[in-house]
Amino acid sequence: MTRQLTDSEFLSLIGPGDDLIVPIANGEPFRLLDILEAHAEELDGVRIHQMHALRERDYIKGAFPGRLSHVSYFLSSATRKAYHQGTVELVPNNFSDVPYLLTRTTKRSMVMAVASPMDEHGYFSLGTNADYVAEFIGHVPFVLEVNDRMPRTFGRNQVHISQIAGYIRHDAPLTEAVAPPAGEKDIRIAEQVVGRIEDGDTLQVGIGSIPNAVMGMLKDYRHLGIHTEMLTSSIVDLFEAGALDGSRKKTNRGKIVGTFALGTHKLYDFLHNNPGVEFLPVNIVNNPHNIAQEDNMVSINASTEIDLYGQAASETVGGKYYSLSGGQADFANGIRFSKNGKGFICLHSTAKDDAISRIRLNLTPGSVVTTSKNSVGSVVTEYGVADLYGQPFSERARRLIAIAHPKFREELEFEARKAGFFN
Image (cartoon, rainbow, N blue to C red; front, side, top):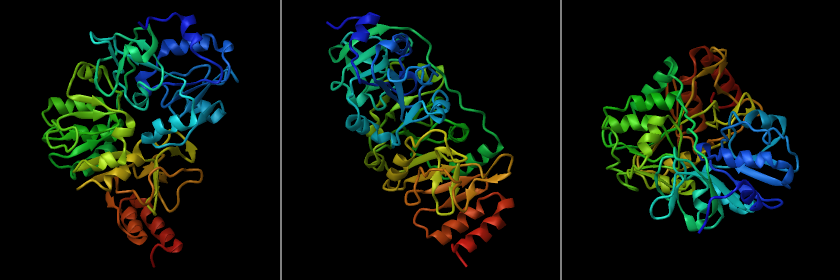
């Protein structure tokens, strides 16, 4: 029978050049990582692979070169500065591809993850997570950090005791994420999106002031569904308002589907022992083919700037890396083949107190395209909606200029004519 591990027993499982995989957000095992850092000088070429780390750590800052290092698949406040200082590697990806990437490019030596306590059948639950690690259950050794505060959830995130190399106990509060309050521009953008949502639609939304504002305006809707990578606290509010039952979904009917959750304790309490929520691996949730199976799918994502071709740069700010692609392109591609699917890329029309237009002739030098011109659906600012899919460049430019801030429209039109978008 697998048993609780001592620190030395855990360390004995790790060999030279091992690749250790850690889940996103609250799946991050703080105590196991503490042990690794405390014994980093005993390690040899060990790499930790993770999206969106929660805590800044010495190893992330490059304190143990050649011993312990971090490979990121999505930057966070804990890794952003380190990446720009050269102590973190960043691997480009679409979220749906991460299990495949890790299979192809790493040893997959071990998964280290937080889990809820074992049930009477011998199963641990990965709680707020399935993400990329759930795909490795039964194929890769797992070491679990069992936390009484992790909610027990359902789906393909169940790990049997026979599938783990061992576990430790460490009870700690889950990290909370609160959406910033919606400003006037956020509300105006949200109103534009909500006006195009209908009863029975299935939603993909993330965290942030605009998605939160959208969700807050949907409480009088009915029969909405959720198929999203990230479950947030706003979902609980919609469910309690009676707007959300998933009864018109084509897949996973009646179920709230996600691949990880990050929000407040209200969300975590809602998830605990809730059979109405299914956590599935990201290569299922974010697979464009699976997204396309949902009729009336609505995707709501954010960007930092967009050019007149319709290219959305959503992972860089001012030409410098801030995050990474996440699942934006996954859903943009899936939405295109969903019957009555609608994809919205939302952004404020300006930045820096209206000094800079976020709608530009060309993207800022150094910016990276997240959603391509071929996949973009509709772009939304506080000045309206520009439906771009299937439109020629000339019409795209006209529609984007129409939703730019008024002070920049004349300049954008002049630049567009000069660049040959139209005469």
